[in-house]
Length: 494
Image (spheres, rainbow, N blue to C red):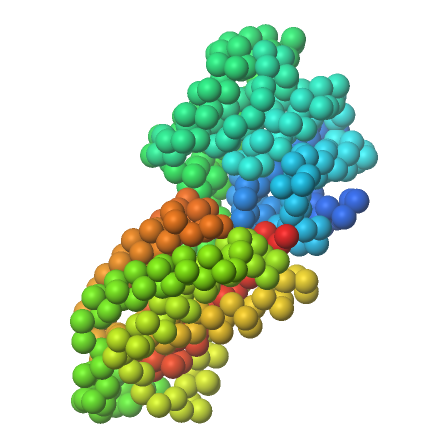
């Protein structure tokens, strides 16, 4: 590919990025967003452009989520004329109150009630039409808060719920929802429907009940399905007689994906202009000795994962791992990666000697990952910018992940293009299996089983960014910082 063609493709990629930003910002026009705090609970308030007091809904996220994860759904309700309050629950996102559900099981429903009280204090909200909507852990919090606030809350939507206690009239007007691909949560929803009195009921008496199953949806994907959004809106419409206008699908996630793709195209188009000979594959001939240390990468990755799991079980016999360092799940996962990386390197995988240029390349790659994944994602669905109280975790988690990330980048040295990405995908699948085994047997890692399908996505992106440059230390540093950043923001503090 000649230089002029590369520059032309790069220009198209920049235009696509600009278009994605324009469309994401345009999707929020007509909806005002306010960041507020009430009794220590950070709440984002979405206000539709309406002239009269509008119905209000509190939307509660699940474990390891944040208000940003619910924003995609919330915009659908806001564009239909509903005021939406999005709290960060204790220990999550911007909320500085540590999670303490072992000693205080009512903590989350109090957070939901705090957001409800915020709605009640706003003149834009019709106090006769208030509802709660929650996902997973937030579904239980919404159900519990709805039972305690029967005089205020006239409708509850519980998405992917776990175990809760419900009755024929408590909470009022309950919709249960689950994805067809999330078996345990769908089973829990069916059980709750039976406890609540079964399908049917009278909205005027608060006894309306229903179960909606979203086809081809799993635990996280259900949050981004338009069928789920419109089903909840239809439920509120039935209870409150909203006469809400038909709302078109929220396109922001698709525009974010286009932006991500455009950044990758831009990066992969420009990198050969700054690498030896204009082609990273030329590194294959420059460092033949390095390639001798990258043989059998799939076997080494598998053995390293098994060794890391065994070692982590042993460490768990001496140190209580659950909540290590004051954060859930992240330390165990990062420690597993550290052990797997050290085993991988001990098995003979040898990275080249680091150079100062690797630091510069690593920073540039990390910047590309931030631009592709996080910057626009923070406007769409990601809690991406760590508040100050979370920042100390970032360097620790990054350093723990670094050995594994460098070992992976070394294993891909000299294997560019489709071959490199295919091998990277194979190693990712091996990692999924070994992490899944660890999650099933190591204390505090069980939640990883739910989000395990996201792991290929989280690894594919840094692989696509690092492969063209063929610099193991730079690619490893960028991948470690990217995963460390994600783990810093994702899991709750205790």
